[in-house]
Image 1 (cartoon, helix red, strand yellow):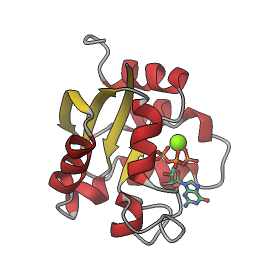
Image 2 (cartoon, helix red, strand yellow; image 1 turned 180 degrees about the vertical axis):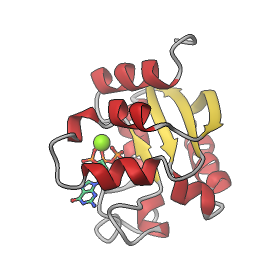
Image 3 (cartoon, rainbow, N blue to C red; image 1 turned 120 degrees about the vertical axis):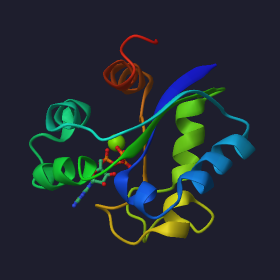
Amino acid sequence: SERTLVLIKPDGVARGLVGDVIGRIERKGLTIVAMDLRTLDADTAKAHYAEHSSKPFFDSLVEFITSGPLVAMVVEGPRAIEAFRGLAGLTDPVKAAPGTIRGDHALEIGENIVHGSDAPESASREIKIFFPDRF
Ligand code: GTP
Ligand code: MG
């Protein structure tokens, strides 16, 4: 079994999609083992997105992810990282298949509803950022 960090980003919370995203995670058979609603400060956001610090969209990414409350979760199950990224769909919501979270609910790459860790090393790094005393 594997763990992944899932975020329902501020656009997903503001649009009332928390229940939809959690429902998909549960129906898939994954288990939520930690969950918290919080607004990130800029330092936490920059740490989370450190791999993108040299990208042209980094400042807007940090501004967006700190713009309001998000839901952070640790999700567990067999191949949880790949399983959740399958539920999320491709990064660009226009390319994401219908039936996925992004394919069903979004149009803009900067506002794509959810985050899911992309590898075991990023999952453990990100889980430590969000839930430092629990895992
Ligand atoms: P996350 O699960 O959020 O990490 O998405 P991802 O792994 O599918 O994409 P990636 O890690 O490459 O990018 C992180 C986030 O940056 C994406 O979810 C987008 O919101 C944003 N992003 C990525 N590429 C672009 C881009 O070209 N322009 C803009 N404005 N945002 C981007
Ligand atoms: Mg990513």
